[in-house]
Length: 335
Image (tube, rainbow, N blue to C red; front, side, top):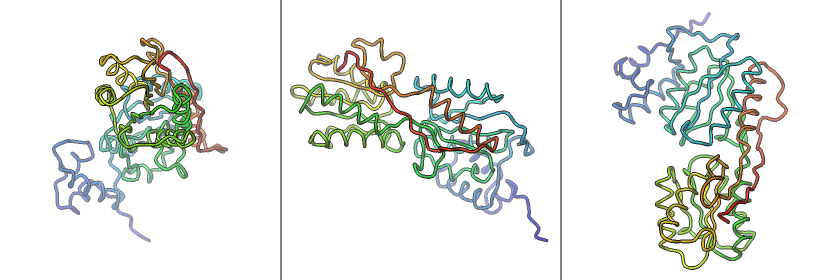
């Protein structure tokens, strides 16, 4: 009979000729470890099949009724209604939830997932961080059910619920072109390596191509994270434009920053520049001028993500494991 040895943290440390402390620091996301060492440790952990155990024993049981939410950035206004959808659906089915935030940091996400994998967790809902590589965590080898929500990594293989972000980008850009036919349309986009960014840009390109409008690099502002980033993009647009144009902002938050910059430069919105966002966060309707946006079904995304996970946990049949929900144009005063 084959002798299967339980892999310990000490085994991983010895195989790399480093201390157990170093392995522990990498797992717990300490910043005083080099990138090279972190990569080597995570590679070895997965190679050896080691599962970090933060509860001193593997406590996961089939009777668990706790679901972990691992979100990319809980500080974003977008998540309030999504979380409401998660919570209502999970509570109705008898589950409780624990919320974690990776703050868009891949290493923190990896650390969180490895911790969660050792807990008494029934399932996980993941909104992956930028540059996420779920395969590098121990998650896939644990048997814990999980679904992606809001974002996904593999559109053909992942189980996920998200908005149809390609359609959102298309609807937004088409609306701008209808409001100002033949006028340039700039795009201020979010981080390059997440699925909503890529899909909204595809929608922008589709609308531009249908209208026979050129897609020019100097009108594409990529990889914007914050209001400050958006303000800087808006400043660059304000300095460049001549005559009328429009700006498609991939989120309402980016639209707020861009609009502030344009107004500070004395540019009239929407007379000279039309602006549209995506999300329909609560504040959008109360800006001056009120922001035209493409609303995403945030609460429904939360509800359907939770429903899919519950089916996985309880072994129920899933008819559709890749769900894209329709966005809706909300016309206000900025277009």
